[in-house]
Image (cartoon, rainbow, N blue to C red; front, side):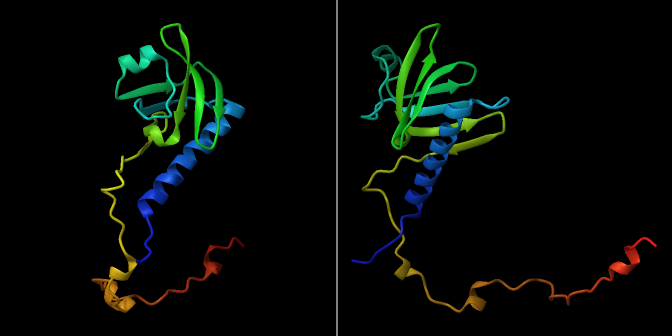
Amino acid sequence: MTRSIDYGQLMQSAMRGLIQNLLIDIAENGLPGEHHFFITFDTEHPDVEIADWLSDRYPDEMTVVMQHWFDNLVVTDEGFSVTLNFGDAPEPLYIPYDAISTFVDPSVEFGLRFEAQEDDEIEDIDVTEIPEAPMEEMVEPADEPAKEAEVVSLDAFRKS
C-alpha cells in the first residue's frame, strides 16, 4: 500500500482552523468595525444542536448571521456555541466546524466554501504516479530571451 497526502482534507482543516481562530478573537474582543458573518451549516449533522422549531423550519441547511447582537459565544476545538436572536427570541446553537458549508464576511468580500466529501468518493493522488522529469522539462520556456541585470547608480538621485 502506497502512502499519499490528502491535500484537500488538509486545506479544509486549515480553513476550519482559521474560523476557530477568528471566533476565539471575536469571543475575546467583539466584532470590529463593519465585520459580520454569514455562516451556513448542515442542520442534519449529528452534532448540531438547535431548537426543534429551527430544525423543522430548516431541515437541510441554515444560514445564521453574527452581526449586531449575539451572546454567549464559546469556542472549542470541535465547534462553537452562540446565542442568536430569532424574532426577539434568543436561541442557543451549537455548530461543529465540520457542519459548516460556507463562511462569509461580506464587509471585506471574504468567503470560504467547504465541499462535502464522502469517504467513498475521495480520490487521493498517489505521489508515485507523478512522472519523473528534469525541472528544465517541466518549466515552459519564455517567449523573450532573458535580459541581463542592469546596474543603476543612485548617485543621480542624491540631493547635493
